Structures are given as C-alpha cells and as structure tokens.
Length: 523
Image (cartoon, rainbow, N blue to C red; front, side):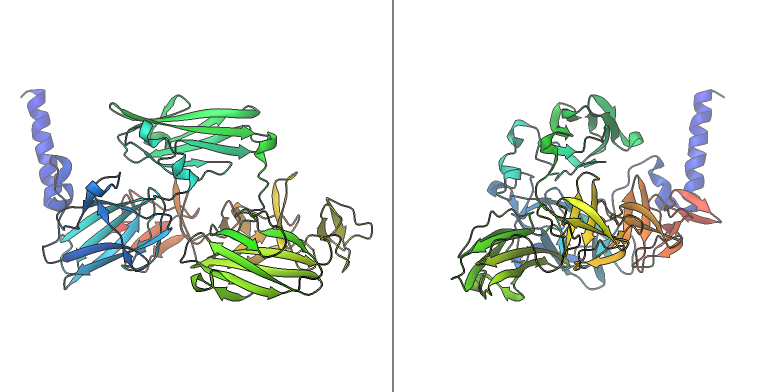
C-alpha cells in the first residue's frame, strides 16, 4: 500500500471518528460550513439609532448617498455614520421566540437591544439574532461605525491618498494616542526617561501584512514591536498591506523635548467635554482639557452670565448646580460676592462627567490665598511636609487644594484635598475609585497588591472592573475591583476558569472541563 493511500485512509478515519462524536463541530476539518441562519420570520427589521433618530445604513465604508440601503435579513454587513456622536442604540423587530445580543469588537461584554453603546470611528458591532429553542437557528449582522465629525481629526486626514485598508487599533506603552483608522499621522509626547516604546498595531483583517518600523509583525508577536527612541523627534512608520492595496500610518514621537509636556490641565477626568465657555465679563482662554480658570472682573460687576456649550447636544450641563440646556442657550447668570467666587460647571454623559472650575475674583486679583498657609514661609513650587502630611505650594506660595496635581519632575499624579494635604489610600472622586500610595501619596497605575488583594488600575488611575485584556491575557475584576480567580459565572449561564494568577484559561481541559478558544466551558 502506497504512503499516499495510507495518509488518505488515515484522514478519512480521523474525520469519521470526530463526526461520530460531534459531527456538526468537526465537519469543517475538510469542508467549509455555512453559518446557520435564522428563519425568515425571526427578524423583520434592524435599526441603529442616535437618541431617537434612526440612522441610515450603507453598504460601503464611504457612506455616500449612492451607498444607502435598507435593512434586509439576507444581507449581514452594513456601515453607519454617526456624525460627532459618541453613542448609539441597536433596535430590532424580532419574531416570537427569538432574542438578540450585541457585542463590540474586542470585548466580551454583551449588550441588550436599545442599550446605550459607546462608539467611535471604526467600532464594529456584532448583532446576533438567535432562537431560544434551536441553537442552530441564528445569524450575526455586522455593523461598522464611521464617524463623520467635523473635527480636525477627520478634516486633516489624507485618506484619499490611501486604499480602503485599515488598522483596527494602535496602542502604545507610553504616551497618548487618539486613534482613528482613517487618520494617518499622529504626534505623541513622552518623557525623556522613556528610552523605548512598545507599539501594537492590530489590523482589521488577519490576512493583512503589518510592518512596524520596517519589521513585519503578526499574530505570533501579537502585532507588537519595541522601538528604541532617541531624544527629540522619532518618526516611526506602520505599514499595512493586502495584495496591491496599502496604507501607512506615521507616529511622530517626541522624547523629552519642550513640546513633550502637555500644558493642558487634563486632570484625569472622563472624556466628556464642553465645546466652549464664555463670560459676559472678564476674559477666559478656554481649552476643553483645562479644568480650572482664574478670571478677574471689576468690583462693580455684581453678577456674571456664563455660557457653557457641550460638545454633544445630549450631554447634561449644570452651571453652579443648576441644569441648563438648549432652551436656555446653555446660559446662566450667577451673582458674585466681593473677592473670590468659585463656580463649578459640570458636563455629564451617562456615568462619564467632567467638572470645570471658574475662580472669579470680583474687585481683587487672583493672588495669594490669605485663609491658611500650609508653610509659614510659603515656599513656591515645592513640596512641604507638615505633621507627616504632604502639601504642594503653587507658583505664588499657596497650597493647591481640591484638585488633581501632577508633579512633572516626578511624573506622578496626586490628589490635593480641601485642606491642601495629599490624599492617601483609596479615593472616590467623580464616581471613580483611585488608589494613592500610603508612603508617597502618588496615584498608582497598573497591577497593585493592596491589603492582600490584587487590583488593576488603568493608565489614568481609575480602578477597573469586569473583563480586562492586559498584555495579551484576559482577566476579570469583581465589582469591588478585586481580581477574580477560580470559576466565574458571567450571569448568562456561561462559565470561565481563571487560574491563581487571574489569567483566563482557554483551549485546554482542566479536571475534565473543556475550555474553548474564548475561555468558555464547553459542556
């Protein structure tokens, strides 16, 4: 018997053995099986909504008028453009006995229909419609989000110079990048101490070829590469290719230059912003990331009209504790007493919020606070220690109070309390938990072992909860932030196993329990 014939017989016997055990699962060893589709009466309509407004569906990523289409159950891929909005809802007209779930790409979290979803340019939404009684009766619809914001992020894009081939995300180990798949050039600032940077560039399609700084990366590398940085400007190219189509993203990374310090006072609040603040008296140089302003007005000015327009019309805005909206033109008049008037302007979107503080001085200048000096000598721009507590005096010797503060020499964030002392331990601020080191009061990030328990604090210090993908591994953080180990029931009947390091196990069998590629127990 020839070797070739032996191989053919062995393969047939293997397939037959698998088919005997579970034919529907293993039949694709030799053939491609079409995805099960729902019956014709399962889904009558699918809508994407911004607020109460239904958005147009498209069959092409350009989202031009010629690409407009109506929803049809036999077509599974759509595009939708959301303008400058940051959230949408998925609605569906389901037949009896059918349900639907929504998942965002890169996340395991499942959303219900009509639940608010945070999205941005390039977000992929998967809507799976399934029968409650027949597991093979299901279909998945893919909706790709396109932002058509008039912001400079898209206006400055040279997308027309490139083919329709994109990265799904770019992530950096240091510095901030506001990635949009159609934006080809970015400026990133890092500290002089950062000698190398880890770049992750994941393509939209695994068949694409990706090169970072001239070196090919793929799934085996998790699409990552460490790149050394010289002082000053570093121009790093990320090239993506699919046959004859290609696209190049350019990262201009500045290490330790004077430009590497962001002068904006973005105090680690949420990414929800006002578009502008204007005043009837006094001057304000508004920047959306700057959260605190000092304004001087004449002694004769006994009230001031404040206008605070949000970036999105569906944001909630409060001026000095009172809600304003489009009917008020987002304006409110506030009475002023002589001296310092501290007025807060809050903008909120769901659980995300940001507070801007206006220190308006009537008849006086915003000079030294005469209430209480932390340090009798009022040393400017330095730390002082009083009775074991840390304080920081600003440029005119006043202690910083009621705000986050970054010591740029140390590269650390601190929260200065009402009395000026730096907070230590757990801190609940703007609906978010943070942890400040008990020894030096600095805000902690990353994995932190606190009180015998592991927690994960994001790059902005916020305590994480739920599923978290960290350095190529999935972890689950309980609602109190503590790292989960052992068996986990996600509340929807799905079980996962997390080892003693918290890492989710996948593609393995533990004590007879088989775990799939997504970590879920296969019963």
